[in-house]
Structure formats: structure tokens, C-alpha cells
Length: 101
Image (cartoon, rainbow, N blue to C red; front, side, top):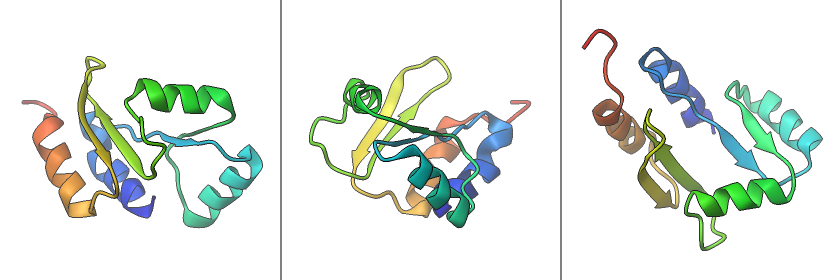
């Protein structure tokens, strides 16, 4: 999550928006995010979060699960398991157009 926060700051001007999904108690998630300094939105709750994860391709119930969605709403990458910060930055560098280009 801290890597996502750093990448959110780095790529925000290029339209990149991170959103976290957590099927945990919303108050606990909020506290945890605050302790880590996470500023991107976190969607917490019950069955809706699980359903959204399934719709995004999360079939194994494994965490972490990362999905990259382009500006048209198309899923362009999915990964079960952790991305390294460098690996995710490289993907975003290729996928998120620079402003003014």
C-alpha cells in the first residue's frame, strides 16, 4: 500500500487513480490506512466488494490482486501476487500517457 501511495502521487497528473478494495470492517480499514498514510480511496464493505473483485477477474480468492483499468474502462492487466514498485511503475509508464502528448 505505501508503494501504491507513492505511485499515486507520481502518476496522478497523468490521470492514474488507485482504489483499494477491502472486505474488512470499514473502521479498521480507515484506521490502518491512516496509520500508513494512505490517501487514495479505499472501498470497504461486504458482499459488494467481493462481487466487484470477481467482476474484475479475481477468481482465486487470493491477495493481493491488482487490476489496471485504462481510461476507457478496459482491463489491461491483472495480477495475483504482489507487484514490485518498479514493475508497476514500468507498466504505468507505458500505459498512462504523459500530459500534453
